[in-house]
Image (tube, rainbow, N blue to C red; front, top):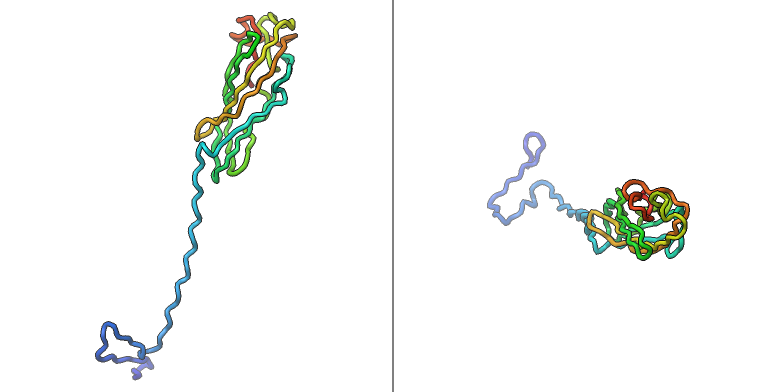
Length: 194
């Protein structure tokens, strides 16, 4: 039935709650809902078990003069799907033979180890001014040769990751003088950490 302004008016008599108004006006088919996109999965955070480290040195197992540098390359492998913060590399020295003094040092580094790759976190000399020095010239005539063991550990936000150990020997001939307290001891020692 038409109303005054051309609008169709439907009269429904006796409609029930389950009934339909199909004859009233035009019916529009229900639009199928499109599936919403799946949320991007959140990567599982890295754990200490996802990390491993290595150290390499061309001077490993060699005899060096005290003016020769000891170079290392330390790499951290991250097998996780997320990056890991690296805060440093710790070096602990031990004298294997020869009676020289030793030291330990932490090289402060701030970098991110990317997911699923190996990242070089340190590359360069362990010391400044060579691999050894002497206090007041004592022991710098070639009669001292000491063997050192270097142990390096990568420090991360998740914990410490052992990188490894290597040894080398240093012969003390014409070395630079040790600074500070090690010079007073009068024995050969490693050069200051860089």
